[in-house]
Each structure stands twice: as structure tokens, then as C-alpha cells.
Length: 477
Image 1 (cartoon, rainbow, N blue to C red):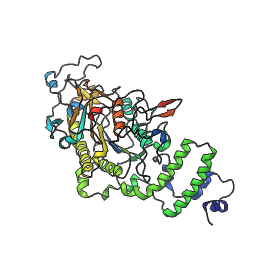
Image 2: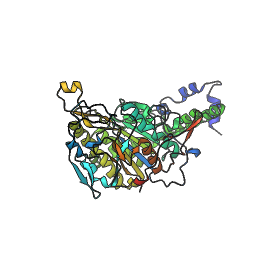
Image 3: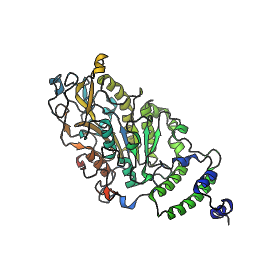
Image 4: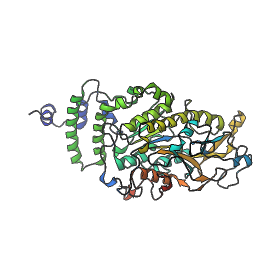
């Protein structure tokens, strides 16, 4: 009987190394290069969902507005800023405004939907789906600088030493499709502030690392390059991979079940299986023209559409990073008002289309959509020296003690504004929600107890929320 073992004995010289074996047998098998990036195959028993928590969401999409959108120009109306216009903030936590003091938003806030939640005129499409959304107006974080705030929003820690939220979810729940990675990051370019530390699996096993995809070119062969073997067919590759698996399992046994090695073996299998579905799922040209038009034609819009296709196909967690059509983030230190007009026009259409599209397909009830930046922007003006010299209109600085986050679907109460900042938008004063609380709530909606989803590393049990975090039960349907 012809078996892989017979093939090995007859064709492979004694003493051949694994490296030599790979070189001889996998010419053109470029997908193996993805091994360190591709997602999970198993559900770890010690990370199983808590049976006492009813999971509301099966999957999640995080639309990340990197740079920090202004809460007082989008979701948190502050008419009192008119009264205090031009006055300097007196709070000792804040430096004196480099501009003209408090700066009212020039944008009208309108009551939207049956709930009557006030939303900026800059977000008319979000306004139309607001009854499916919960606006948290009392978010706060620890640091008003991009790098630590970005890292904390993604990992729960201000230093790049912990696993990302997506990795934790994958560790706790596993993937919903063995032919695709379970955690996918869609980014418009390689120049995302902080970068891979935001989606790292850190000390979690490598199988929970995100697959990062650059979406500047949406041709499917660019998005998932080298996924097809140009020389041999699927059946022949299966035989090769089975043989490699036999060798790898022997190697694994000789190394006492090394977790990193085990993760690489599983990742190779995922890379191989991606041939079955990846080229189809990642190809948004298969969507009707009317659907593509509904989302828009920008990179962010196309990424939102791809995110929907991914979660629809069983991917557990997708993060979409935002950059505008002119490659600008939400970091509006200058010309805040005009910049927000452009940024909102792009982001509003795509985000609302995603929510509407999920709902029309019956997916919104168990898909959690998160829309947030790392912090907000100051209710007072900023005029840097170089901007004054150019007569550039005022901007807004970083602001971490109050900002807004939008949640939709996935068991969240729709048509709800939760929490509040003070009358000037300076501090979260009613039902404050820290980033740790947001993470605890997201895990809860996915059926996980943030205090019990732990991983032992360096002699202690770690978790996404560390020793913090409270679930915001009031926003859960």
C-alpha cells in the first residue's frame, strides 16, 4: 500500500533536515509564508465561554477612527460652549489653550430616529440608523497621546506588551470557519501609527495573531497574494501537507509540545485551506453594483464592505482602520471644522451602510459593530505657531477625559445615549465608561467573563482588562 510513510522512506534521503524537506517539496507553496500570521484552529478548553453568560454576539467589527474624532462635533452636543466661547479652561489638568479658548461647534445637532438622539449634521447617514445604535458619551482613557491611547484601546495597556482584544476573543471563542483566519485587520496602508503592536497576540500562542491585509489595492490577488500554487493542484498539495504534518508532529513530540511550533503547524493548515474560500470572500467585485455604491468608493468604504463579507463567512473579529481619501487621520490639530466635514462625509456613509447591510441580511442582531477613536478632541481651540503663520483655521487638541463611542447590534440597546460629559464636554461625569469597561462589556456581549478569560504567563494570570473593568449592563438588551 502506498502511504506517505512509504513515500518518505523511498524519496527522502536519510538525515534530510526539515528545512531541506520544505525547500524540495513546497516550491511555489507561497502560502506557507503566511504561517506566522494565520488564525486559530482550536478552542482552548481553559478559555471556554462562561455558560452563565448568554452570548448576544457571535462576531464583531471594529471601525477604528484613528487620530481621535471630535466628540463635540459628532455625537456630544454642547450648546454651553456658545456661552463660554473664547474663555480659557480653568481645570488644572489642561494646558492653557493655544487658541482663542473654548470653541463652539459650528455644526447643528439634530434629533434623529424615533429615539430622538441628537447627532451632528455631519453624520446624516448615521442619524438614519441611530435607532440601531447606542452612543456612549462618557468614554475616557488614561493618556492624551496617540501611541499609548491607541495601544490601550486595542490591548487594555498603555505599553505594547499585551495581546490585542481580537486575539483575546479568538483565544476565548475560536474561529467560525476553518478555511479562513479568525482575526483579520484591514488597514489602508502600512503607515498606521504604532502598527502591528495594535493587533499582536503578544504572549498568547501565535495561532491567535491577526492576519493583516493592506487594502489600498482591492484586487483580490493583491489582498491575498501567493495564496494559489501556480504549479500543482489541490490534491497534490494535500498529499504534501499531510507528509509535512507527519514530520512536524514528530518534531513537535520531540520538543515536548511547544506551543509556538504547534501554532505554526496549525497556521500552515489554515493557509492551505484558505485556497478554498479566501479568493472568493476577499473579492468584493462579486457584490452587486448597488451594494458597492451604497458603501461608497473610498478605501474605508471598500474595507467596510469586505469586513461584512468576512464576518458573514465566519471570521470572528475584523478591525478596519480609517484613513480619509486624502490619506489623513482624524488628528485635527488645525482646520478642525473643514477637516471634520471631509472626514465625516467619508466615514458616515460607509459606517451607516455597514449597519444597514448587516441588518438587511439578518446579521446585525448577533454582530457587534464598534465605532471609536482612541480619544476625543478638546472643546477649546488650538492654534499652533506654524498654523497661525499660515492663517490656518483653528484646530482641536487631544482630549482623553471625555469622548464618544458608538455601538450597534450584537445585543446592545438601540436608540440609546448612555452616560454624559459635563456641559463643556471636558469630563465624563455621568456613568463614566473607561476603556477597561468597554472591553469588559464587549467580552460579555460575546459570552465571555472578562475576569475569567485569562492566560498564564510569566508566573501570573493575565486578562484583557488586567485588574480593572466593569460591564455596562445598562446598555445590554
